[in-house]
View 1 (spheres, rainbow, N blue to C red):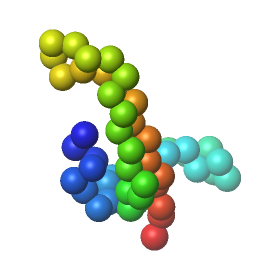
View 2 (cartoon, one colour; view 1 turned 90 degrees about the vertical axis):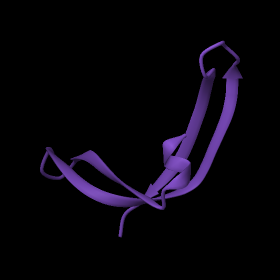
View 3 (cartoon, helix red, strand yellow; view 1 turned 90 degrees about the horizontal axis):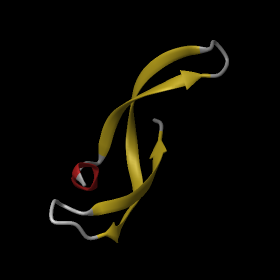
View 4 (spheres, helix red, strand yellow; view 1 turned 120 degrees about the horizontal axis):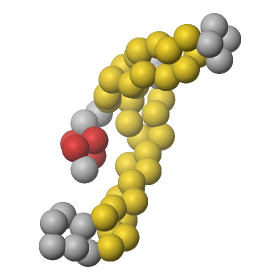
Length: 54
């Protein structure tokens, strides 16, 4: 749930044109977290968000 607090994060992704790994800083939008299973240690969460390059 660390990403919920952040406006942007550093990511590594595959550039499909050069087939090389690249690093970039991207904005986090539409963060959603849903508890899938409650356990005694923090539970299991399904997390989704969109990354936007700038």
